[in-house]
Amino acid sequence: MFKNKTVLITAGPTQEPLDPVRFISNHSTGKMGFALAEEFARQGARVLLISGPTQLFIQHLAVQVFRVTTADDMYAQVKQFAIEADILVFAAAVADYKPKVVSAVKMKKQANTITLELEKNIDIAKAIGLVKKPNQFTVGFALETDNEIANARTKLQTKNLDMIVLNSLQDAGAGFSHDTNKITVIEKEAVTPFTLKSKTEVARDIVAFISEKIHV
Image (cartoon, rainbow, N blue to C red; front, side, top):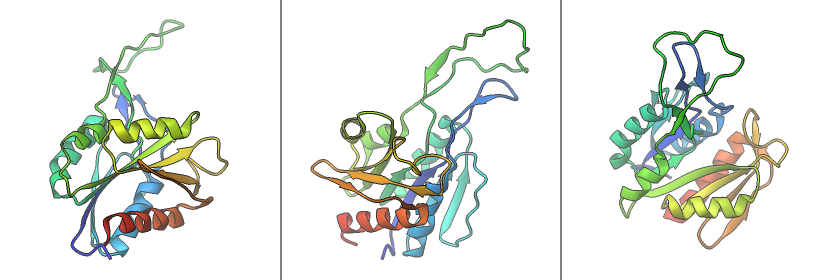
């Protein structure tokens, strides 16, 4: 169905180093992004999967995996390959902030408290959205804890996305560290909820939804 289409997918967390042994990260496993890569490949697409640190592997001749660590690493890879993609799916849980200074040696435990100065990471989906071509279809992911629909709609507009897949931490079995997920697809003029399913089934739903939108 997606023959002759190139799909770029980001997956997993990023790790932002504090020193040689510590980092800031989140609970993302990458399962959703990898499931999407499998499904797009199964339907004939060439897939460029840019993954943060995960324990996951994928074996499919149509999938090229690029392993990265930090948000800056991920952005560099996305920027390199974005021009090749017909569809871009930003499923990674990219850290919003990184330490302003990274210690070259292990930070010693001394004071009872420590203050870290953080600076904002680049918003990869937004950066690509500003320069995307008219024929590219872009999909974002949002994990929210409150005002879910409103927050997702704001991201849809500010990042120039065609649709957002919304996860809510209010839904049991959804979000990080689960093999299941419950999503709502947000578009400019529509909100489409789905029931709780395995992430493999959710990937099929998302890919089918995208297929309808781009008429493949």
